[in-house]
Length: 265
Image (cartoon, rainbow, N blue to C red; front, side):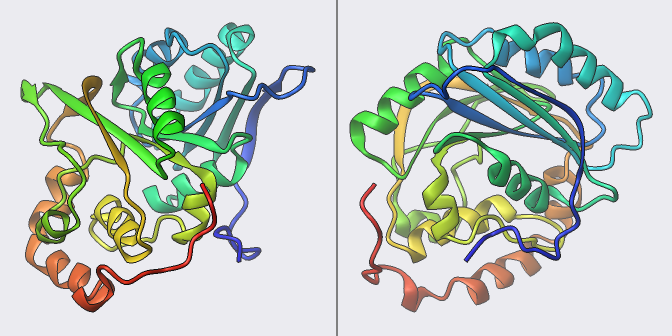
């Protein structure tokens, strides 16, 4: 069953480019979601363009930003840098749908089986996608994530560590910046809308429900921008205890550890 339903509102395509060549075998699609980050989105895009992994696609979904210049800034950047990429697409939601809808729409349009997830306020170090791709393929993982560096509002190292279903049941220590197989995204049902946040945590708990074990690459490859306006710092923090109950209801402990048939990776 398709994650994106036929009744879902179709976003407007405001920019589209694709080289007239065969799709590269090692293509990586970047699922990039944007909402009112016009001041930092070009920094994010430049970090993607600077990747040592050559064959890249960006599927950018703007979630109905209220900043009038947002779309023009992003499409102008794509036009200027299009020869760097195999494919570029900028989609615009007709109304604000939230991060889950936007990420699912980006996955839906991704041309590659290998999709990297990030928000438009974050940054990648140049070798991030090259190293994550090698680890994903070499270890035959359903997904691979790295350590993070926090910057701006707080400086430090993130909390990523080896995948542990028992520990994940207690709290989420894995950010959504990860390279994920599109087939696995489909098998777990993609991202689900969770009122007030924690869609990322819910996504990883689905991996546990389905018996998937992502891999951890213990290198600092991604930069996570800490700022007071983020959804994590506003809605999710205020609704913390309610969200814990939601996660327990959606992912009861009885499901953990069950053997669920999956296709070969």
